[in-house]
Length: 126
Image (cartoon, rainbow, N blue to C red; front, side, top):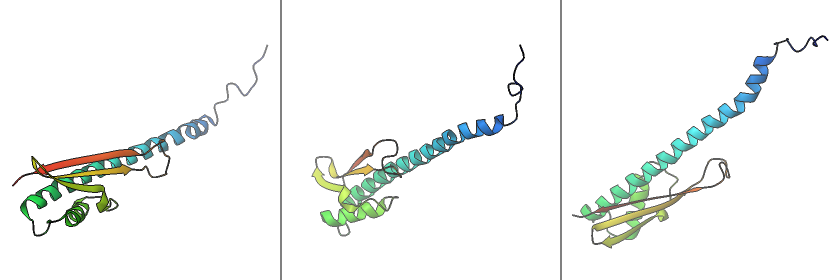
């Protein structure tokens, strides 16, 4: 019994391995990039609410009403796509409290299945 000649032949194995592993590697890179954008957006929300709560407590001329607090909070986020309507303000027992709720959508809509809701809050008393 003789073996066919193509069984010991190893030419083209690297091309097949490359074709099988490249989509997985590129997908992993996209997931890492999107996770970075998600963390960047969360940090931006936290910075925006902290800055707006401090502004509402300390600088009442610049942050005296709800609209100016929301605008200030949106301007302090690192991500410029977060609207001012994502922020809310209440006078609480802890002081001036600003909250943010934002839904992070992955770059291709539907990528990884869903969007992720993000939230942040900060309270500052003078």
